[in-house]
Image (cartoon, rainbow, N blue to C red; front, side, top):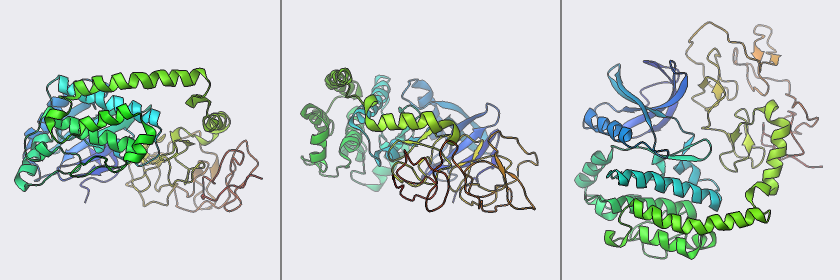
Length: 430
């Protein structure tokens, strides 16, 4: 069970919600009330870890590795007898991103960033020992950063003591307690293989691996051989470290970049695709009205956090995990909420801990609650009144469109959408 609740204070930080739970620590999304920025807080589990020195080591290593693709530690201190590590807050992990469709060009870009991060660490003689998709964090603009330096020793002691074999992304020699630079190469090779093939190979890693057919359709044979060398069972047959692996990748990527430039000259690049043009036109017309500042977690189309479904592919809560336009976040649906609201206006979530009696103005308020006892201000496309929890009965109109959903009667952009963003009803293009 989580040790901290949403809206709970921890020193200068206000907890917004939990991101992840592990045997060693919990990670929370929080708001720094002094610097006025969102951060991720890593807090060790009491009585589970071997000592604060393990987490101190993580902070010291992260401070040493200053690189654009390595997650920065903002601060570390003891707060109310808890050792708290404050870090940059990303949008999602690579593990989450891999579960959705991803273009080959974008996968290549992410692979290059992952290699750059690990190559920098190896250049500083640091072996990560825990390379996996969960430890790569994505930021806006598809910036990828490597995280979680410092747990290696704890993880290795656990593996040695348990006598376990190969676990997920761990190289065979590392599972026996003998990590090398080639161990990180092996783990990253598996991460990249999954990124391009959609499959995670398992022991005994005999070629061709699961997902090989899909891999062949996405990348050139030379890139397949690049991955095959990275995940050889014998460390001597792999790249000696990520520096050498990155150099091999850059040599292969050079040809891909030349092909991309040729496609752009021929007018067949990504920027001229029909879907991109459709999204661009939609944003021009409705971005300010709907606040579609996020991307769908599945199809990457423009969406708003108020939407119940993606209007392009129908995916549920498409903006979940994105940085909110509001000061806080509902712990249930992770949509944005204001600090003076008593309830979540989007999911009928439970009441919040009252922080203040002050009411904050907002230019987005455009209507009032229908309850005569309340009459609180409402923002367009709220489903419930954030003051009294009354369900909003009057259908919301979409400024700039005269069309309404046949099922819920809320306003829709029929000329663009495939689904109603408010109830997921398929849109009929008549």
